[in-house]
Each structure stands twice: as C-alpha cells, then as structure tokens.
Image 1 (tube, helix red, strand yellow):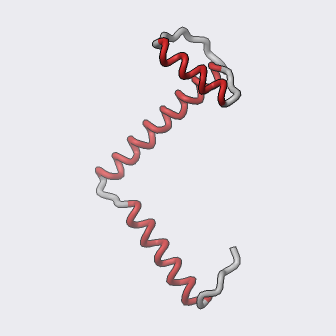
Image 2: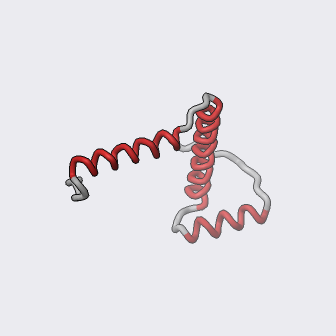
Image 3: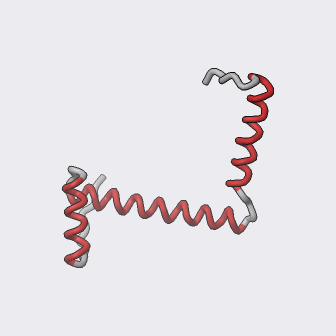
Length: 85
C-alpha cells in the first residue's frame, strides 16, 4: 500500500536526494522511502542497544567469550584440522 504525502525539504536536501536516487537507479520516491525506513530501523536498534546497556548486559563480551569457547572446543575435537562447515 502506498500513501501520497506532501513534504517540504530544503533545496540542498532535495538535490542531494535526487543525486543519490539517480546514482542508485531509483525513483526519488523509492529512495526517500528507503531512507526513511533505514532511519526508523536505526532508531529502533539504537533504542534496543540503549535498553540492553541500561540492563547491564554486555552482549559484545558474551559473544566474544562464546567465540573463544567454540574455538577451544574445535581445537580439542579437531586438533587444528578444519571442521566441515
């Protein structure tokens, strides 16, 4: 479903958007739709990351620890040989 809306942009912003849309072979409307959707997703992800941070969770450290553990197990099981993916 598509909604038609009237928006106002500065001359500089609309020219930049037109240039990027042309470069990507998209219509201006499609490019603006994609740009707005990407911005909304960044906002959602940033809010999620902030909530995780406030909860005191350190996901990056946990992921790195998991990767080290997988590597250790691989070394023990496969003794340096590559395992089948």
